[in-house]
Amino acid sequence: MKPQVIAQTREDATPLRLFWLTTLSMVLILSQSLMAHARGAPESFADLAQRISPAVVNITTTTTVAGRTGPQGIVPEGSPFEDFFREFQDRQGPNGQSPRRSSALGSGFVISEDGYIVTNNHVIEGADEIQIEFFEGFELPAELVGTDPNTDIALLKVEADNALKYVNFGDSNTSRVGDWVMAMGNPLGQGFSVSAGIVSARNRALSGTYDDYIQTDAAINRGNSGGPLFNMDGEVIGVNTAILSPNGGSIGIGFSMASNVVTRVVDQLKEFGETRRGWLGVRIQDVTEDVAEALALADAKGALVSDVPEGPAMEGGMKAGDVIMSFDGVEVQDTRQLVRTVANTPVGKTVRVVVNRDGETQTLKITLGRREEGDTAIPASADMPADEPQEMEAIGLTLAPLTDELREELQVPAGIDGLAVMSVDETAEAFEKGLRAGDVITEAGQSAISTVGELEDRVAEARDEGRKSILLLVRRGGDPRFVALGLGSE
Image 1: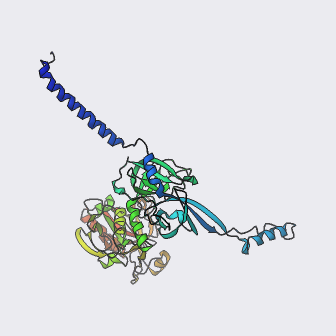
Image 2: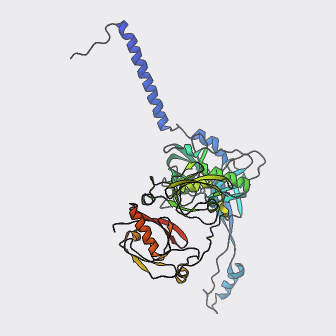
Image 3: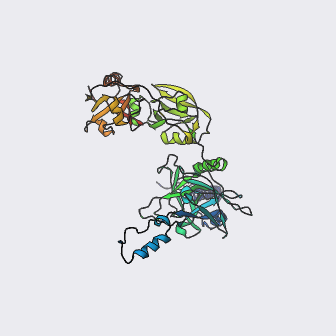
């Protein structure tokens, strides 16, 4: 087939050619725009670094460290060197000790023209003196306003004759994996230094309860601690805190505490000199797939309440076995999210907490306490009578009701009733799920138990309801947790 002739004459072809040329130009412009937006890489970081460097500071701390004991007992009595070492120990002071001064280096950044400075708690912890070196070359002493070891944040204050140059916090929640970022600080004591990279990951947790780290491959080394992580608008979206490294140097895995966590801490330290986090007063654990099945939940999400000691939650009517589905209008996905949400809620606020209890939804009104003043005391009650250990082959446990002797041996408070685990079949699921001799089972199927017969009844009820597993509340050393055990076949 011959190609069809679309334009027969110049007059016919001109409008069509213009149309296609215009369309092609628009496509090329749009394509270039999308490529530039996707890359987001500036031609240079120089302008940004020049603009924000004056707000970044080097921090030097000085600490008094007790001296070590002198070489007592090294020189035998009567030795010709005895007088020499005695004079040496006398110079060291009483008991052969002489205090010495130790210095450490870190980074920080100014957040207000009147001299508030943010850094890491571990940079200034235990310091007797804190000296701030500014980019322009002058130095000022700093006073500690407050610290929060939980997020490793500290707030300092300097008094300057003139207004200081400062930087603003940005919204860390808008940062995306792949965005360009720039770190500034005092790595390895080398003075003001800049490194650039991208956001490698978000919402990282290391070891803290309130962790929300931005992971970056921008070079971060020792001495960078407390320095800022900037977005391309020159806003602080993180505080450089830690690195993951086998040799102590940067391998491209650094962590910065997200600005949306830092700003709340800084505001409280500035206002109160300490943190004041909301406190619900419960012990919780994640809802796993087997726990969700045991509780007949549609989805494995929420926070399972394993214990309710005296506190706000108990006063609001919450019970062990409740699954917290939403808190103050926010849907709860897991325990980590709930802990952070509660902590960010003002102390004294009355919130609505939606729980799933025995398959039904209930809304509780709870007035939050203060986390820092939380009390986890457990009320007392009477002891239970003794009984002989009995084996439950179905779940691979040998159990016995708590006696006075068992309570003392296992250090179980008088208010805790249940069954002591005497032994665990190592081939059973219970052993795989972590149950061990010395554990105490206080609930089965969300009902309190104190005898093996009551546990057997709960297992039978679960089978009758078509359950594949049963939920046990297990305590070890005073710490409760729920364990879902498969029932197998009768």
